[in-house]
Image (cartoon, rainbow, N blue to C red; front, side, top):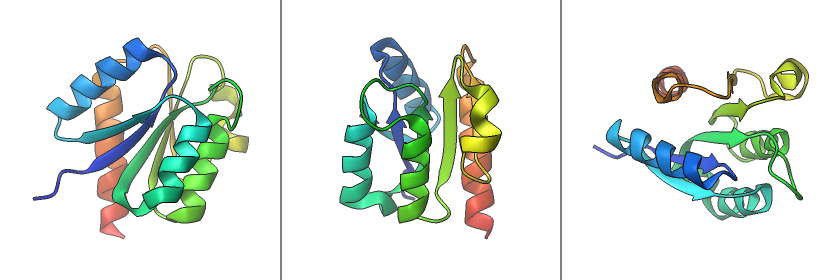
Length: 126
């Protein structure tokens, strides 16, 4: 059985480490990048390897999380996208890609694991 690979785009190192540990324990492999430019590079190199993209919205200079989600969907139409944000959730309906999810920070790791599993299962069913 192949381990699902997820792209995590998060600029907070402590959150990167926590999510890496929690998602690995749930059976996922993470590729972690710290900003939108690195996310674009990872997606452009091999977007099809990712079952889901988990991205913060505010990523400093360069592309933001909304742009990362759009780029991922341009390359793989059914890739699961989950946005994480402490202050941008109100923009999700207008800036997020269709059939994505928004999780407001702070959140429990179980919320993210459930969201990833749900979106991947739904994508695989189509």
